[in-house]
Image (cartoon, rainbow, N blue to C red; front, top):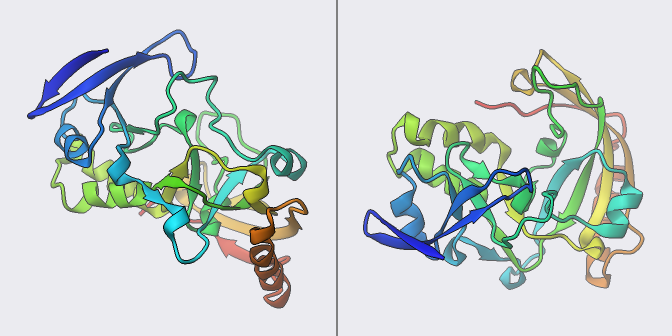
Length: 254
């Protein structure tokens, strides 16, 4: 692979058709956090690897780490297969950060949130695109191995890196509400539950907010043994709090 030196950081370059769309993207293969931050302000840098020292290891946590994902695919499918990146056979196994959008390239990772209500947003209502179904599923999953705290990276860009608005700080700040994180995969035995919700949008797009209602909880009967106590806690929460039928506010950008 070729190399490129920017702001004193020399990194490898990959040219990859990430979605098999016929168009390649230039990926800067940052292998350290120092290189990642040196390249972040550069307008010509649009895609970067998430380096190892910006990731975290769920297996070293003293408590199980739980995250949430909104997805219209039914529980039978997800309970049987888990989650994998939805891109069409990308040729890199790296999680890739998009510097223009200030988020994860969704076709290289399984994007999640630390907040259950964010799951209700997906798929979102976007003007000019066919409206998504009112109902969707929020999946609770357990993280294993290495994962990326996307929200922490966005927070750093928005508040400490002092980038101009055109260089991403404003976009990063806008994305903070989603409390995004991601991982390379979620095994089927680590999918804990599926919560069916119905959304009522307040306007023409997700940015205007709205409400969502809890309709149904389904638990995965085939979770790994060490996940069974977590599933019980979720079931107890659903029952004891009387969640079925409750309506909550949809999150929206600040």
